Image (cartoon, rainbow, N blue to C red):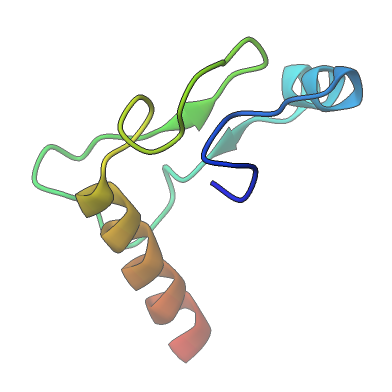
Amino acid sequence: MGHGNRFNITGAGKKHLLKCTAHYGDSTVKGPAGTVFEAKANFTGLVLFDFTDPADVVDLLQSVEVYLSR
């Protein structure tokens, strides 16, 4: 969301995503649906609302809090 709320995946980033996945499936806090979001090399559009919604961002931030509290 730091790039104007848009995916900005460069050529180098696309190559990297083909080798290493970008997801938060291992996060501690998940919403009721248990949705796992994974960024793909071909993503375009808005991060917030197209890819994820505000409640999922809260879940992710709570997972960061749990991780850093250990």
